[in-house]
Figure 1 (cartoon, rainbow, N blue to C red):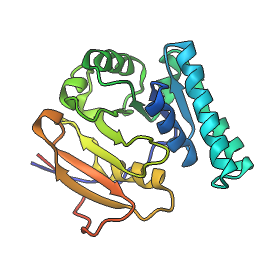
Figure 2: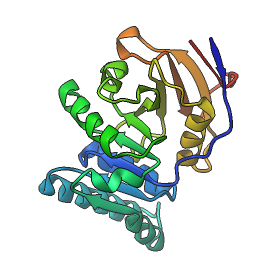
Figure 3: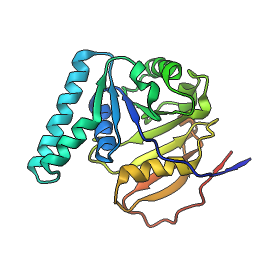
Length: 221
């Protein structure tokens, strides 16, 4: 069966579950694109470390001349900390970014399923675990996707977006997410098969430069 892509808007407010190295880097990616982001971690010390790392990264970038002090100030205001899942109730998309442990990820997705509004995109940053199994912890597997950011996320300009087997999220929406995060960069989208153990049927790669042509934005099963 083939589902054709339809128009959709990119998320306006995002969340990140996990304030470690990947989570804090992903929060910076969102903030750099001008998107408000809620950074959630259940551990106060871990959350404070994540925020401290974000501040240090921005300070280093400003020192090197990559960002202006005003840009840094405005981006830091976009990142809001949270110790519970409840503030994620209003986000349009949330990215889980904890370490590769299936039980932990399924526990987090069960909570996201509980608090997030209908239609919110629930994404996992996993690079190796089965997305279908992660999605099984929710009552809406069709809203689950994989968003694999490369480390460090705030430096590496490559994002892989992977469909969960039951996902009805349209490719245009996924593409707009990546294009907004990429800012003014030249982006490329390609749909390629993923390994069976990873779950998702196809992968969307958004690269700064690529010689391949852009395929039709169609989801196939």
